[in-house]
Length: 319
Image (cartoon, rainbow, N blue to C red; front, side):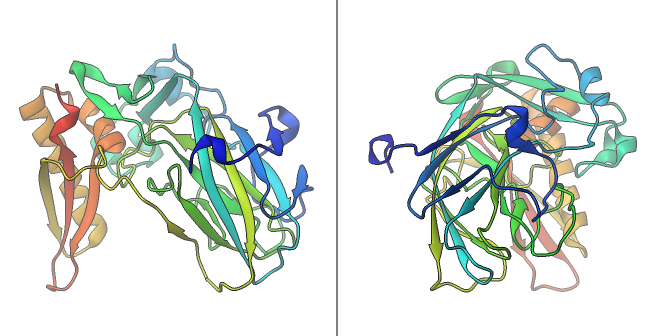
């Protein structure tokens, strides 16, 4: 959908009164919109400004994860009732020129491989219209999406934003890009939608616990679907399903184990080995690049007792 096909009905800034940091169905909506109306959300980065364009790995190591996600919202949608589905059309994204990807000290236990990285690591990305700039001339194509899209859970009280839920939240599905439609099961009157945690790009897996984390504007149109019945979020998307949106040459490493998570770790460790040996990256740089641009696929789950996860890196991101 092109930018000319809609007008923004409500503009929600990232001012403090528009930000919350828990899922809670008792929060008052900032606005109540009619089905078909469009809202533009200004979203802070996932760490709420603790990391900036001039930050170092030490700044990231000292960041607090409490609370971890500043959410913009909630927005109520007229007519949405428990049992309905909220349809969210993602119309547009605008970044602010920079982003970061990093991993925390291993002792915090975050990310896929905390045991492999004792110290924190950080890369600040310069973003232009089409790519994010990494080290050694590596360029990662931008495919912006919100890591968090969700509605309030039916269960009363405050709920942590870190794990995804039946009603959405911190899903980090990299294919929720411009032109996609996300379907969320409604559990409370008005649905109470919020968004946050925008990424300029991400590998499928977000293995070091961050994508290219970026403050951003998200523009979305809302509709209520009474003809749908879903238990957990679903989506329609045109991808891109490779970093460039084209079928393209890839290098892949496999992880084989009797546990899917262990197979995933092996696939990523082997990819880090490859990027270090063949592309001249440090192990920390390779881990960051895996989180931003390496896609994981479950290749096989039928040949017991071992399963295969494969990690793919596109040749095209390298100079």
